[in-house]
Image (cartoon, rainbow, N blue to C red; front, side, top):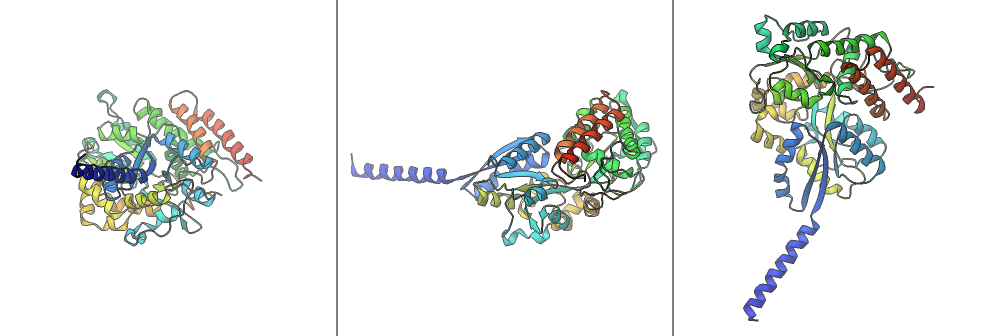
Length: 440
């Protein structure tokens, strides 16, 4: 072999080995997240992170919300280390952090600017003053409505509607022959699906999950009135198959012009006002979440956040990724790709200070106020032994909240009466807190 060729082959071989070594040492970060539009956008923009961090490879596991919750809970409780980053919420984070299941988020890069993150969000993702997740987006709930349909009927949506007014509007705006439904609401079973919404209805009707001694209250007059109202409205004025509709299904219905009103997460505003994603972008109006006998607990507080399980073998790389995904830089990237109205809301004060955001997102200040005024420590008219507006902040709620959700979904579908659903729910909730030792 000629010396020149031999040298070239040697060099090529050394290059291949170096390249292989780099590839072999690349840390694979497996991310479990849900199939909401904001998370799909995160995946879409993530090659920019991989390009800036060639030693990190991202592996995405995108799941339907209820499935994500099951998989994340199984992974964290068994310590199997299947995921390096989990998308979890304001319910799980403080509890899992307290149990030592999550990596505390300390020593974030200086340019991350943690003080810029909305305080309500930081507090909700902490336990004992220690932060355990970074907020990807934060939401409350609000009322969306079709301005054109209201105008055509000579109706006016108040800034703070009552549930009685919502029912009257829904009746007048239902036009089933033309495929327009007076109201769209979550009916899909799950503690974070139909029960997130239904709990706010119960709260504002003056109800609560438990009294001060942890006795379940699901057969109380307040629960019966609230859930009968909710089920009745969906049956009369809602779309067919409402018991199968969660956030994503209702977002599709609303953005394609099928709903006159929709009460749900404030995060949907960015999608409904986005002309690329919504057929009603220039027709949508907004108001506060409705109230009944009390404003307490009428609108929820939730954060979808990124956390690192203690079982992750790639904690440093995972931390790099979640700092990027919740950074000012990432918000700029979404604005460039989707427009300012669609950036992840509720997380950073600097977003709300941006003139571009104020102009593109007329709902911005309204949403921030809703987030900041939600009070998880005092969510109900009568005192309660738990925290959480649309959930009960104890580990057992994930299980019994979903079972109750299944019964109520069954009532929407006409498989049982509301009274039957609530009697079953009462027994489930009481049994769960008794077994866990809350009831003395």
